[in-house]
Length: 73
Image (cartoon, rainbow, N blue to C red; front, side, top):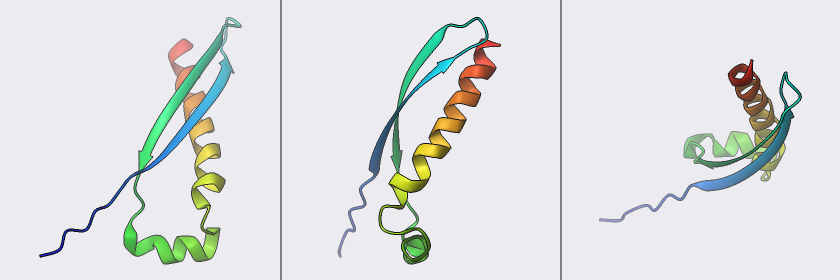
């Protein structure tokens, strides 16, 4: 019996957001993600091997900003 060891990939993203009352909010988010193994050939073909550095930072930035703004409104 063989056991496949799957490891998660870590991405740390920091943002600074100004909220409505001009307070500056700094947040660092650590994301652990594991892509679906069957989708990796398509991901690598369409986005490249460094897909996580291309796609995730912009998504994380927008989601974090939206969450922070919704909390401080």
